[in-house]
Length: 445
Image (cartoon, rainbow, N blue to C red; front, side):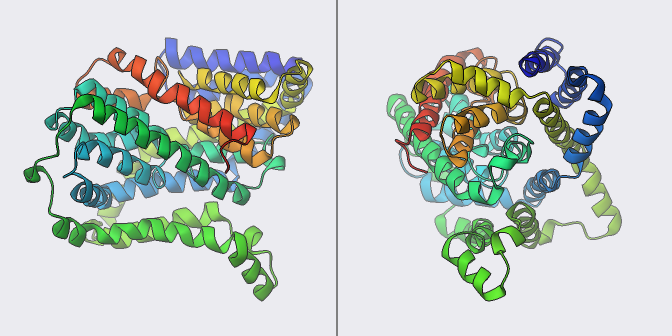
């Protein structure tokens, strides 16, 4: 059972480094990778090098970094602001309008940006003050923004998804293209849950419609922001041509296997960057020196995400080399648990690990094992992956909470402790239930 001992040491190092020492998750993933190598015995050097090389050269690492740059570009050029203004003009005049805007905008950005802290910061900075003006208390406003930020994980194409499908454990079981549409459906179930929570908070708060002085007229907002809707259209194009009847027709016409020839994780960030640059072209740098300054400003975002993803991949590869998936799967199989009990157990493990870690680190630590275990129990690989990603989206909803919670509470100027109970009851437990219902087939994907 060397693999299980390796997993214990891996989690202990990551938790110690991020929670007690309070250092970055990137550093924790490096240390976790290094602590795993002795568990591979005499093959440590060979396994370490091959795992790191495989991680660094994976196209999913490129896609993750490209999505980070894409989100930064959309933010810097004001495209995201125009999208939020458009939603606010449409929904801000109804009772609880700012809360509805916060939820819908978080879902929209979750399908594009995928960084939970960035979603909380972008949406929260606009909607939290408006929610307060509409008589929603600050703790509820922070809870809503932090809970909604998890939708960045439950829509394609988050870094957590890339870590999962790019791992040595899950990669042979699951093709990334086959996961996209099921995860989209799973994300919509989670979006429906957020809409219900928003309705409950509005009903309890007695919020009033937002004053017209705090929102743009529909004609003005639509005139400024209608083009931002193209962000969702261009994402749909690679998805359509690589799935269903369109993929079959194109494959027959070209004589090639289009879903395999066209990598959605390569092309979606490309088309989004191009579209974002066109939409925000007036605020783009006008000379080489200004472009260099823009890239320098974005560099810190690449550092943390890039290091985390590379060493998350590498650590997952080493864990696979220790035999962890087979050992943990065999251990759970010997328990002979009913599927729903196994689903709850895996969900609780993933959520517990996600509490102190990021969703990306959680996928590397236990997500891949969870998928492998569910597959061994007869669950389709896509279904297992969607459920585990839903479980991991509780990053901000379980104490001590993740970055999105502290971003939202900082904007609202509220003690995070005041949000813990509602985050658990309104987000963590329902998401556990949604994941379990997906696994046992009650919620179709």
